[in-house]
Amino acid sequence: ITLWFSASQSPYIKTKPLHGTQRQRFNEDGSSEVTIEVIPNFELQQVILSYGEHCRMLGPDSLKAVVRERIEKMVN
Image 1: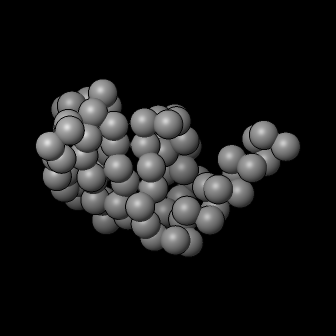
Image 2: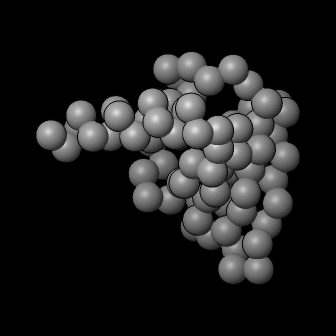
Image 3: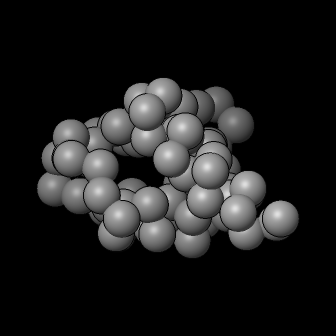
C-alpha cells in the first residue's frame, strides 16, 4: 500500500510509523510517500481517513475504491 503525506504530517509519520514494514521517501517539498506491506482491513481504512486531506492513497486501486465509497457515504 502506498500513501502520500503532506509536509506537515511527514515528520509525525516518521516518528510514529503506521506499520513495522513502513518505508518512507521524502520529497523536496517535505511531503513523503510511505509504503507498507499489510493486508488492507477496516482498521487501516480508519487510520487513513483520520489524516484527512493530509493523506492521499496512491495504491492499490482496490483499497482506493473502498475508501472512496466510504467517503461518498459520509457526504451524501
